[in-house]
Length: 480
Image 1 (cartoon, rainbow, N blue to C red):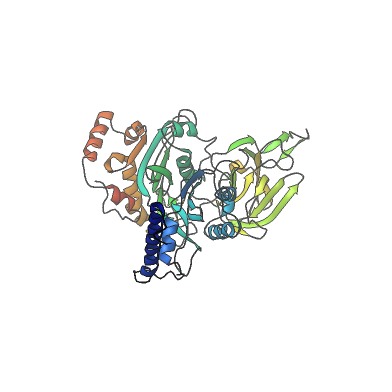
Image 2 (image 1 turned 45 degrees about the vertical axis):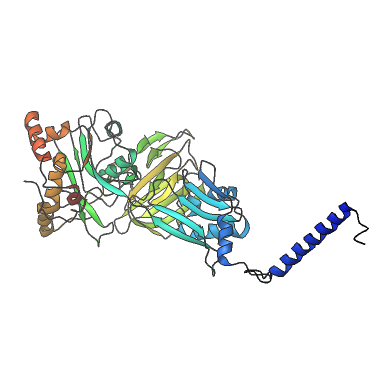
């Protein structure tokens, strides 16, 4: 048969035989080579992780804008169903999701398999929230939350200015900020009505802690000392005295040991603008001539209103034809009762019979009831008789004993007042404003005052660290 084949046929047979032998050899060798067993194997955890790492990763970064919610932002990430419910539940335990401010940053890392890492950071906050998907064998696919506190830097700021028009104009014009102004106003608001009782020629100065993260100012902390002087020469100096047992952890006192805090605020929010005074007037809506038994303060809708003093909420009304949404507070046994009307809404969780602290937010400015625009109607009664709120100055909350006065004035009061009146003596203090007023207050000629400041600036007697930790100082590190 072989002899019958042509030369081409013989070559074809030889090639076919060689191919058969090659394939047969591979089949035999597979049983002797390492890893030759092709039985199905379970995919190892390391292999699973390797596959996950090789998945396409996507970065998502967004700052929440007006009209947006955190929930909608999470849905834009592709979070749905159980993952969405789990993430929002974890966040809800850590923070109030109903009050996520505009500017909140949402950063996320996702893959085709879903969310890997979510970070949420509120603007001007020292806290960030992290949610990660677990890779451990027992918690595969489950989410975990971690709350991190960011490191903040604190430095003392010395601010000073002189009033040429209004307090607010002076403060902003000298480099201050609204948040800083509020910290200052809160100290003297019990004894000074900033919208009408400040005068041209008056001045101010104070020290305040400025808090920043990554060189961005996020807020202001403790104010150890503040001063307001009047053009007629009268000066008010308020120095903080801590007291852990006190309702507010301490208070500001003058040199006679009398607290600046009174049992009633002059107004339910700082720097209020009076739009209608106490007394007879023509009602702007009805046109009737009648007694206006309170004061109207104009403010933008939504401005927080605080309790003028600590007390119990005795009335809380909604949709009243006259006052709209309003609250009445009875202030203990002092005989004072205050009423706040035309709220756009009450503070969340507020109820009748609840005890509120002085300065606690109780509602927000609105125009409910009989009102022509957003404002607060504020009334004060004493033993059942209406008073002009602008004339009510209240009584001091605390008066120190003679021994306490001696200890306070010779220690913290003396130390902080000297530091305030010589800001250049403190290293690391940031100074804003026009310090010429310090020279005027020192009663020294300008050239001599400058020499003193230059000399103090070269000293190492007080460092920034000493200043920030000296709230409890007794005068050991005071200036000569």
